[in-house]
Image 1 (cartoon, rainbow, N blue to C red):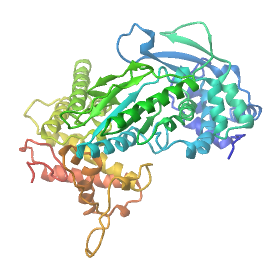
Image 2: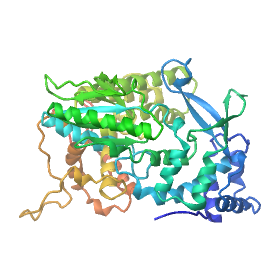
Image 3: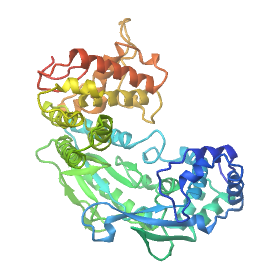
Image 4: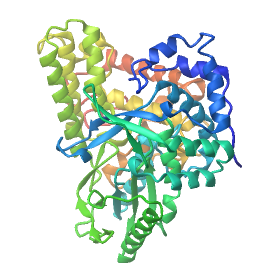
Length: 538
């Protein structure tokens, strides 16, 4: 099936203009998003639709729409080397509106052609689905005392080195043809860019390769570019992708298993050469996850360079260790959250508005403690307490209360906040509800099993089977711990009684606040849980 033409309607243009984020910076043309948004209903502005369709039918794009201001964003390490900065393109807002129209049509066309191993920048998929689908398999291997080797691959300046000719050939292979293919060729060619720092600008320079970062089309085009990369894997070597973040993994029993991993690395290196892109071997890492005292150590090489072996690796923001425990990750995020809380205390001493202080906490501090909790939620009381301690301090700062003046429970109720343990369990339940009802492209029944009725006519048809786990690590993983949470919440109301995710979330939230108000016992050293699954609450 091919797609050769795109036609946009006036309603499409109006909706995209109305939906513009006015906080976004404008491009080289200096036209702000607010101007376009507020003039979205003006008759003359609606002529933009005709210009868009003319561009789409002719396959040509105005040169002004292909210019970009480059803002370098520091990534990590030293601020001196230029390679430690990520270039972000600020494009003209009008061209981004047209790009969104093209994106919607292209996405609908290629969605079913994208490998299911790709989780980045796709609807109903996320970092959480990416990590859970991989870590459950690795956790099951760990539970069976099977070693798993994971190799994290790093593209060298992935978006900046995409060969335009190769990309166009892959678009053609994905059914893009005619004027639309011509338009993409024009979209990628003749582009200009300049660097803007603190108001100072460089000279304009041509762009011969690279997908603009900052455009809606950029990530989708890159996903298409690397869509056939998993084909390089052989045997039982698995591949998982989140945009350009790539990893391969497999269970290791013999040296032959390691050789199949090495062969996959070789195949991927060959794929790189054919596609004029490369991995940065110095940043590629090998991680062995096992409980064995004497694991099988194998030297993996890429382009004749030995890959560094690590005991911990950050995977889309989550620290993965060789034992699949979360001590390292929790220490890291609580340290960062405490630093940010300290920064707020030092910089906002005169801010007396409680709602403003609460908003700052939620945006800057709690966000650090809440990212991807479905993946790393702790099972040990000490770790739960370590995380909760940050919020305890934060609530005292928000309300300007001294220690001992107001209990933690009362502070939570005053601020309408849940304990962080409750918050993690709420996220677990809502995520499972979304997966179960098709709002997320992750089939939960690949990981959990419903209870079979048999002769138990009174059993709840929504209940899940309790998993059999040998290790506490695997027992605490998402698809195992969700069983107890889900079975518990289904006792109060069947999941079919909720028409939307929001209604389910509100129900669970109200239930948690009821428990907090009536049953929260601050005398226990642990933090709360709706299922009381800890030694303090047998």
